[in-house]
Length: 391
Image 1 (tube, rainbow, N blue to C red):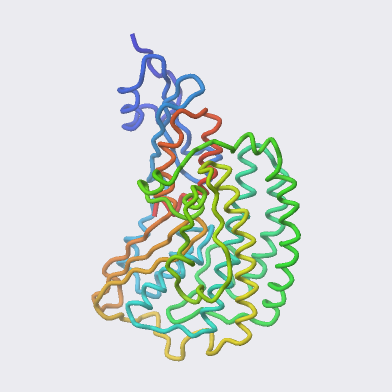
Image 2 (image 1 turned 90 degrees about the horizontal axis):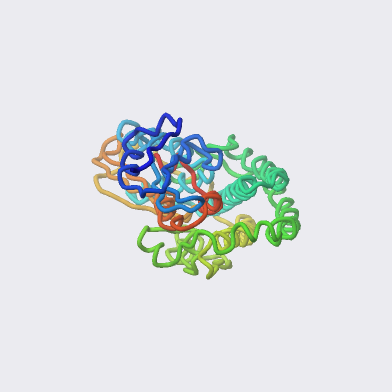
């Protein structure tokens, strides 16, 4: 006779758990990880079937944070929708800003001034650093170490101070505009950027000594959560998850947009395809972002044009009939926006391509056969942003 699940979880009797209960083995147990589990950093739930300490099946359950972001794109004007991008991904909102305005600019045939392109690169790469630092500190915290998050937030606060000057925000940015950016970078902002780069570069070796080379961390992440190239292709994974499997795919290099083809930088990869590989890729990417920012700041001094095109469209713009797709390289992977216009003030359709959505679904396969304790290490290595998934 099969044992019945006797847990007190109020979600134990819902559809997903019933399906797992129906198919589970005689000596297995069905448990819920979330939707309020601290390591999910958002309202994510995973139904897990375990045999002792080992995971047999894992099924992500989405929708707890769904806010109809795409539907809102059908009722707001083209200009009103820009702030929504900062709320889809609070980790790297400027990447989403860029993908959306880039799609609209493509629809309207707008050429962005050179200075605005440099500013977009600088602010987007600074924002990438804030995202990676947030992930690094929170990931190590999930694995049981408290001290590193204090260091990461110390550096991250300096970045937020820099970004606050032109954007007037510290988290959910709505800085980019169709035709450029909202405000130019002032001299003080440039000075702060130039002061931050050598400081942060000197901190990276300390991060390596304190955490990356720590044997406790290595034992927690090495050979855990294998997501190889084949899995990445099947699930549509991108970003550090794909590069952690040895595939050097980065839109900034493979499908250059804006002025990224002017910069000299590397695409870090790791062949291990495990949680450690994804960790090392992100740590290496921070140095590459510093390289890009340095070159962009130097190029900004000689850039032509203003921070926005002279005849930038108003928020009540009416792009011509047509469709456009624009993609950028976000901190978690490929961020894409597909926009359809009927020549009206309001978009006909906005479709968002979220990297976290694709990356998460590889977890179900990667978690099979691993220890329950390793689920946190695998999940955290994906650097998920739940509002981006439940868009």
